[in-house]
Every structure is written in structure tokens, then in C-alpha cells.
Length: 417
Image (cartoon, rainbow, N blue to C red):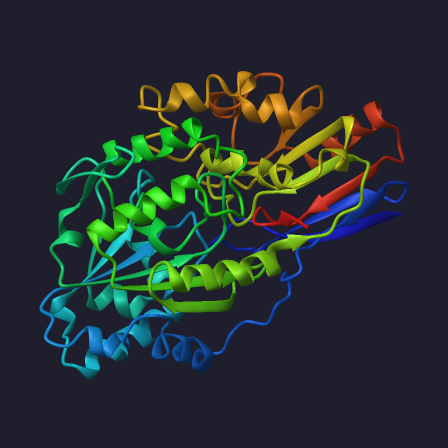
């Protein structure tokens, strides 16, 4: 006899789920966030949010007499279904005579890999891809320098974005170790800023201690981001809350700070997860941040928000990621020779996450799409890689017996209650 669970898997790809089986002797439970099954909003509910913004005039009013409009959207490492939101934005712009020739859709990739046509069809919808000007941000080129922030962060931003008359942004509000949550001003920084700005912003996370402790809070990094965006400009921000499978279950439009704070209120409610104490084994599924391996450090996000006693001191942490894009790409943190790679990958075992959250616990990694060279580019060699699920379970039983107490968390955006 076996116990079976289904978890979301391989964001933006089919099949959308992974079936997991465990021996019947295991004491295993699945712990879902409170908003896991929150109902998907209707088109009318999405439209109403855009028509009734928080702390800004209506989008159609903001767009009057504007010549150049930029719409910034998050990239493929986020599940935000932008294609469900864009039609309502375009409808509002059309009301005041804004034509498609006046609009640029800017892909806020930050230091991530550029999006291709197939990515854009999935994210934006085929109609938009076939009819609008779409550009990837470039963190090294097409930048304008605007000085420094209050804490000395150099401000370099995409010139196309800065030179636009109306700036609109769409982003998902999910937990983030530096900025507390994504969304709001964060789609501008790091989304469409230069590599020097990205480097300073990420480095400040270590300086202020928000790396590992900032999830769910308005951190000093978030405050610096928002101070910078006050200088750069962002006229209309759309902030999306997602359920377990990436559907829109909350949306807040308007001022990039005020609407974002409202979104955070719902995010904290929906992403909270109540979990039992004393589990020997934790399985952390990395969906929706499971397209590439360089996002896998977020598998520790839940532990960063949880009481230390939830996991046995001699227990095991299993990170699970499809990583169908393999190692992936991050020009600031993940590539050999990149500016912050030495602070992130090579020294991880000596860093805060290992010292505070791992200690003597064993860490395993399950993925069918990476090799050991990929894994050890980011993680210590003390982690063992598994491509075969049954082999992983057998090895765990050899350590913890045939009836361990285990917990399964089906997505990476969960935070502890």
C-alpha cells in the first residue's frame, strides 16, 4: 500500500502536476497554505480592480494626452498570468486614443535570462505578441544614470522606461528574502534597472541583515527600492496574489506603495501555513519558482519564517525542483565570474542559511533535469542529488527507519503561521 499526493510542478509547462507516492508506513502529511484553493478571480473582478485604483486617478485619466506608454511585466520565473490582465489595461488606454504604436511592453527580467517568443505567448497571450512592440530589459545597456538613493545605491534604469510618459507595471506579490514580498516597486528595481543598481541593492541585503529574515516584512531593502522608484517614477501598479497553482485570487491596482500594502495584507493571509512540530523530514516543492536551478535557494524560505523546533535537529530537508531549464541564468548571482556569485554560491555552506537553518541536518535535492555539476555550482557537495524518487525514499528509510514523520509543502510561496 502507498500514500499518494499531487503537487504542482514545472511552471509554464505540461503536465502541471507531479504525482508522489510514499510507503503506507510513513507518517506523512501535506501542509497547504490557507489560500491554496482560493477561487480564481473572474475577468470582471480583475477589471474592477483596474477601474477602481487605490490612491491614484483612473488609468484612463492618467493616460490622457500621453504620447509614449510602457507596460512592465514580470518574467517567466513568476507565474503571474499577465495575459488575463493586459486586455483590461489596453481597453483603458484605448478609451483615450492610445494606439498600439504608442505602447511598449517591457519585460522586467532584471538579471534573469531574456524571454523568447514562446515565453511571451505563454505570459502575454498570442494577440499581444502578434500586435505589440515587446522588448527585453538589458541590465548592461540602454541605461540612464539618475544619481544615488538615500543610502547610496547608484540609480541606473532602462532608458526606454524612463523616457516614457506613462509607466504601468504588473507583478506578482510572492515572498522574497530581501524585499519581503515581490510586486509594487520591485518590478522596477531590480526588474528594469542596471547591473550596478542590482549589485548594490542585493549587497545591501547582507549589510542590513534582511537576507533570510526579511520575508513578509517591509525591509530596509524594500524602503530603498521605493525611494528609488519615487525618483524614477511609476504611475500605475497592479499587484497580484496567487493561489497554489498560479491563478489570480487577489488583485490590487493603483499607487505602487499603497496598492502594494493592501496586496501584502491578503498575501500574509493566503500564504500562511499551519504546520505540526517535530517532523523528521521536510519535502519542500519549489513550484512556482522551479523552472531553473538558480532559483532553488528559495526552498529555504519557509524555514526562515518558521519556529526552529518544527524540524528535528537531526532531520532532513529535501528540495524538489523540476528545473526544466537546467541551471538557468542570473547575470548577477549565478554565473561564474558574475559580480555576486562568490557571495552566494561558493560560500553558501559558510553563510547564514546553513548556519541558522541547516546546521547538522541532511539536505537532499530531487530533480530529473540537472546533474551534479549544476547542483554544486550553487550548493555544497554535502547535498546528494536524486533523479529517482523511489531511490530517494529508500535512502531516507535507511537513515530514519520505515515509518518516519514527514511533512510535504507543495509550493515555495508558503510562509509559516
